Image (cartoon, rainbow, N blue to C red; front, side, top):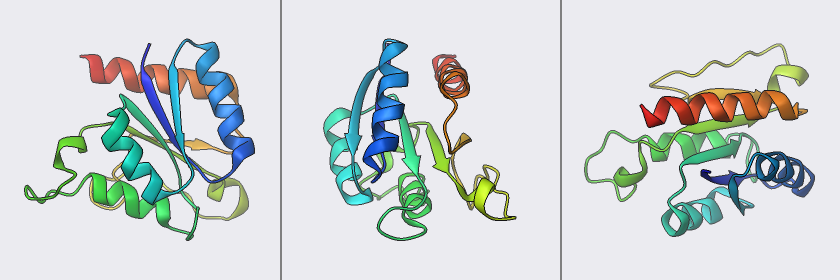
Length: 134
């Protein structure tokens, strides 16, 4: 069982992801914004973060991922830089753009497309968590 933090401002998505993860015996926490997410990361110290791209701004999720992965050793978030991030996005289905994880620009482990397929989500969560356990 892992502690997983969902950071997303859409209550329907949060409910769907929560139900899927809890059915796989994970402990789930949630935050509705990047700012609230930072508070919860400090409080919960999750094993995994599931992060929406678009919240209060169109790039809030990307900005939060970059803050968490900052190479600055004096960053107050440095102790959280190794928490894996799955990025939730509808961008792939609503635009011709296609994003991939990139260590410098999109420092996340994987993208999960909306609408969310529960089996796909569980397999991606399991894959990321098994990589972190090694």
